[in-house]
Amino acid sequence: MVPPARQRRMAEASQSNPAEGARSYGGGGSGGGGVSGGGGGDGGDGDSSVREQDRFLPIANITRILNKALPNHAKVAKETKETMQECVSEFISFITSEACERCMTLKKKTINGDDVLWSMATLGFEDYVPPLKLYLGKYRQVRVGYIC
Image 1 (cartoon, rainbow, N blue to C red):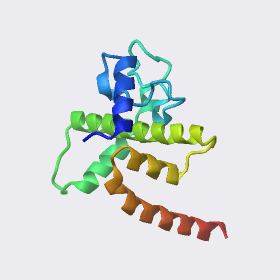
Image 2: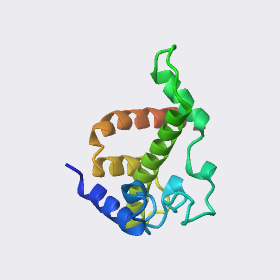
Image 3: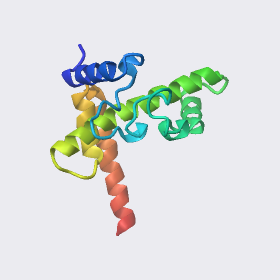
């Protein structure tokens, strides 16, 4: 079952650019899409001012994460890395866009970790929220230790 918020995003995306279908969650006039630069397009006939390097996470970071998750002898094709780069960047844009919308509703100017966790739960990724809450709490404890 697809959560209502995700259905709404997918519908907005398909209406804004039918050629891309459900791929462009980030745009749709929500007031900013975070990582995607608010465009949501692929630079074709849409927002050509957003460079590819600004829309995607660096391929070196994607490669490092893939290599950590796979056995040492595994090889990853360039096309696979590029596909993962697009998917990860789209996921971040999707989550960030929902968090941004929430912050705008609450008249907040800054998205924080709690907003991101809320958006993940809202969009159907609630299984990830408990471990991420633990990680966020530990991160905040370490960060306070550096400030003092």
